[in-house]
Image 1: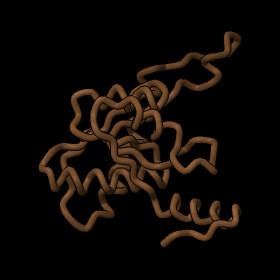
Image 2 (image 1 turned 45 degrees about the vertical axis):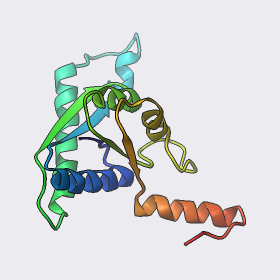
Image 3 (image 1 turned 120 degrees about the vertical axis):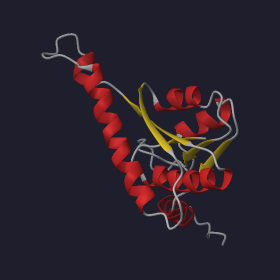
Image 4 (image 1 turned 90 degrees about the vertical axis):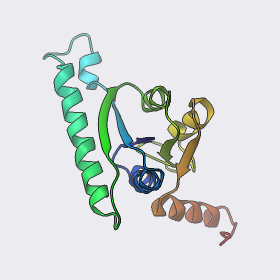
Length: 159
């Protein structure tokens, strides 16, 4: 089982769901974080060097802290979790990670720039392109956003 992690509320909810489901199924969990090189590295005139190993290690350590924090909040047992960080766009990294997995779990919204989107672009890309079933988990924060949007558009939320 694979879960996408980025530290967002959606990723926290997805990780909780995936951890509990992995325990129920008796399978290990792979928490995958995508990262990009610093923007300055892409600038031809940038001063300094990009250190790929250091960037991957930093992303992996950040993801590990996030995973440890969320697993520490669980009331039941935690699954065996492997944390990996892969350079690339989150959608592509997660679709690649879905190869050979039984399930890919993603949050409904991560750190993307469109706060009004109910299903983020990464989640949508995974649903459309992953090579295994995908579960999209909505966080309490995403639920609150949906209610606010419905009220702004004159529609009362359905309970």
